[in-house]
Length: 189
Image 1 (cartoon, helix red, strand yellow):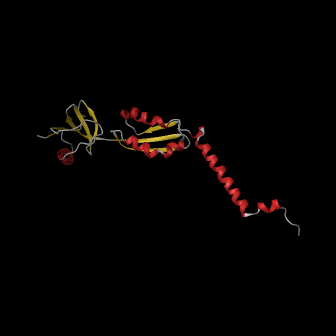
Image 2: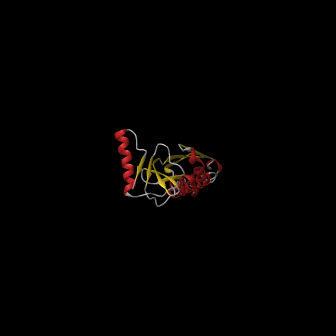
Image 3: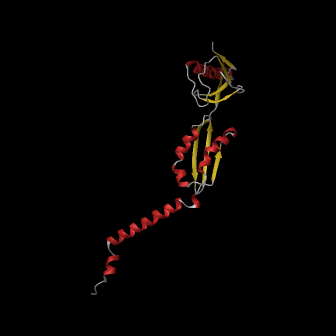
């Protein structure tokens, strides 16, 4: 029987198969790195869904940083982006979804004011957990107006606390359940 040449014996060994596997993995890794940096995977569209009109501009300012960045980088940082959006005083929650190859979709859930508290410089629109949604010179139509509560702050995003504010919210909910409509005002003396 004729002896195989040395080259033929090398291609049939486990050592050759391992070398081939390493080369294939290196090729895949370099292709993945190139794909991360290539234009087809650059974010070009940021879609804002379910966002109240008054929030579109401030939210768009935050989202502008996504444009032109790698899709993969934005996808990896989407939780940090969601938390940044939720820092806005009028945003209760945000969902960030990345759509291959170049779209980021954001859904905003806005805070809903339930009380208007008379503050030193106007009206504080407050949501169900006591967070100041915004400060306005006039109370919101249809919301319970709270007088006599000493609000220590008027900054949007601050949380008003105190048993009286909680009681005002409870009174409002109870009246709405029993009477079908909330009271127009709650006054503390």
